[in-house]
Length: 523
Image (cartoon, rainbow, N blue to C red):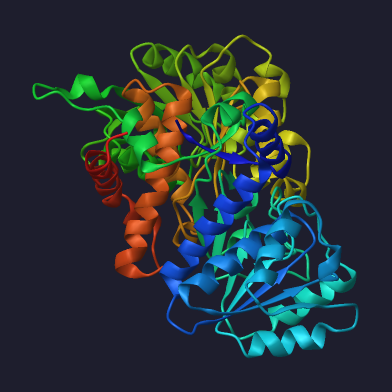
């Protein structure tokens, strides 16, 4: 089962289902959560005499904190508990576990409005702070005593271990409006939350440890959570394996319509990326005036010269040639470096309507599409789009800021409305399907923030399409491998200075690493 990533509401319903339908006492879930969180904390920070400050809010997050405090006391830590409410006002399951701490003579202090200074002093005297103030249901900003407490703890030199999500951060959107905490370690239960993976929250959660607390898998399945985290094992299961007697035809044929004056680099990088991803044969269709650049370039890439129009860009006069060539291809990629010339826009729009092969649109092909979305009203189900946030904004009629503020829902809404497969690029690239499902990608780093890496991605995905992968599989696997290639490049060179061409030799290495992980840990 792929790893689901939940919103706060989805997680709350999963919890409720476990309690109401499977009769698991909520106190049992709290006990398990706190006990396993304490074990993970001790594994990373534990030593005899460790000075721990556990700060608890009123809700179940605070109850988890009380359980953690007990387990750490039993391990030999010096634990001090501070509550952001009068301890005698505790109720429900948290009150049960606070009562246990009282019987253990644990030091417990309530903090009131205007007393954040006491909290600051206690944190300064501690080796570790456990943040059990706010849970996943919180919506920023934090105000009043809670806000004061968060501000006080944010100044503490000690590392913070957060329960579920650092306090002050939205677990669903990843918004991190001040005040909020930054954790060294985040301990989350049953399911990852969207906020663990989305920026800016991802910069504040530190190491995220997912802990099983015994919620039946059926509770998660019944919730129908649409978002999943792509893992190496998922990708390994999608990648085609070559037979011992394989020939180039088994890798499939890709037609890449790309390039314009001054932009041939994009076309060539995409073509080479497709070959590195395993395509058997790649034909680069370019304006006839630029065919020499292909012929004199990488010898593995074949060339189809197309009629050029104004400014030397691609022209609708080449439509029939492309359509004829496409008939013998497994997939097409259109867009890298083609320019936004009006005649080129016309060509792209006609191709979208008439090409009967899996078709990936990138770069200026997306801008051509954004001028007339009605051409998506046809019945085709094999269209792939790979926009960056600016291109997504033009497609969706939003601002880039609006796209970035709600990346997952923006991608899903467009994919379902227009029945396309879409990869919204950027940190945590989101792959969305026409059925309303989505994947969030964990690979990649700032090294990819350089010209040409998007062209490499379109080539990788096109190469996988040519090998017979379905659109969703090609996007999920391609995005993961592309990001991992960036990680491998950065390992050897650092994040600054990596170029798009540096990714090319890392693509097959990324594939090898994925397959090696699958062999180490079969699903």
